[in-house]
Length: 293
Image 1 (cartoon, rainbow, N blue to C red):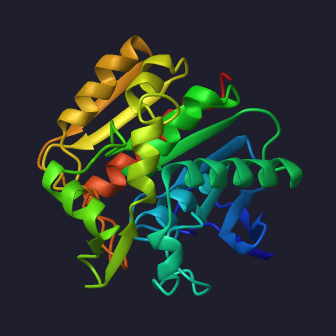
Image 2: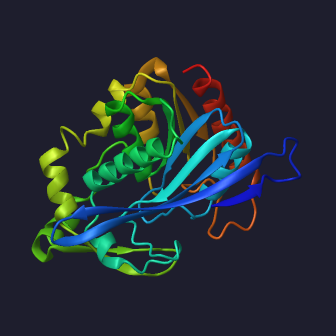
């Protein structure tokens, strides 16, 4: 547990407590799944936002700490965590748990999110309802969660995927033959194999519990959909599809010329005007709608 002050250069200085946690999900004879994270807890918090990172991401990556800090400064508990299959190890920074990454799946991430929300309730970080944020694949997980958990009161997604089936037929053919497909981390150069387990999972549940499009149509809470028109990883058309499915409960914000990470790099050397603007918009959206829930 650590107490820190919010940025003294900002108008309202708050004391923010940083609580770290580690959850072990038992799997019998298999190695346990480990979720590591932290909560930023301001004095007199007005609510809670749980933050989900994306594929090849982690809680300390690029803009996630910045977003969490801005939420805490605005009076909201911000819970960030590494999915158990992120591949990131104990240092919360490097991909030392390659086997975990290899065998990660969508359903495992949904179970991880349930575990984090459950722990947040035990620690009184969530009183009743909560806000949910997700980026990229984490956005897809957040959409699925918002559709199935009535405690989610407000949703914000950045560059969210609209489908769990993301692989070209030729890649799938090679994948079936070898049982693995290589995943390259452009930032680090690491190449880590991804097991065919996730493909089998999508083939079995892609039209049911992993159907993001169906979940989007079912969401009945305020939802801000943010996407850059120059996203190199998730086409902007996926945001337009989600917005169309969600209907009047959603607001869509398309950012001209903005990429998948909204101008953020890792480590984050500076907060670009684009990242600052979209962060402010996100915090304001949570503040407006969580206050009404």
